[in-house]
Length: 365
Image (cartoon, rainbow, N blue to C red; front, side, top):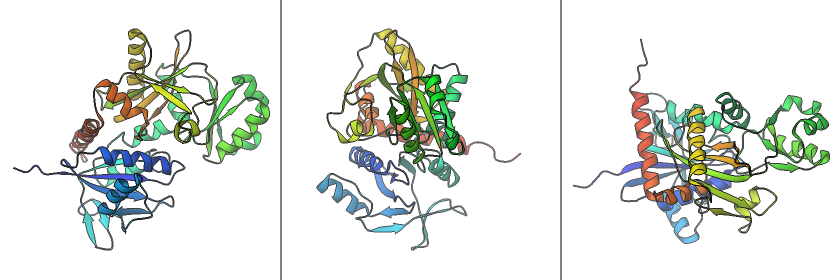
């Protein structure tokens, strides 16, 4: 008896400065999916926010022949959603619904990782991989994330949050007095080190603030923490488990966008990290508590700093971590005993489990 394939829609691109990173991640997910188990669909979101259903054969040919993934170069149909009758995706040119079983948003940054797409998928009753609207939103906002972690008793570094409306009143000297130098300036709602600067003096701090405000209306300025950068991958819903920790060793001044994605010699990884069993366990426990505190589900990656004295500080959580060929999330799980193909299977199963629980809830008194 032939097993019915699961209709899996991979969503990529996005209206974010991390658009190109999403394409890289999605390409690797596509290459790792078991084609005998899944019937793939490809939904591309252009930088202007347009959604397209892309031609499947054309996408696969591009990946096979050029080892890249694009949106513009393919035959495509406009895609919308239906909120009446049969909920789900809708093809207006064909005046027909487009059924899928589960979605895998491989999106990074605003309008994709911050709860916007997750909320849309919840409304149209499509199961999806990764945290729900709440977990995605609080995980993306570095200010809200830090406040929740602090209230839960998790260790975080000192920081200051600034809103766009406060920009003209910024007192660089006061910031330096409170946080010291160097310090890091970041958009509150971006990842992949986009818009991040390391400020070593007052002039660099002012310039860094201007750069960060180009990407977001809210920014965070963080105290520098001297320590090793250790990352831990999470997999599961309420009962999430943590992978072995891995270490990022950056050869640039810090783990910048260039050292992550441009310069092949910009960083290296050590998996598992060279840590005592006791310290590994402590980091894994902190990662799981971070995941639960931020109401995450499915997957995430938690990054911490480990100081020479053994103190640990949570840096951030990434609710849709990179899936590129050099990304830590799949490499950490491979080192823990789950290969890429089985990792995708588990993520899809977790999406179905959560959806079934959500749909079983009462919606009327």
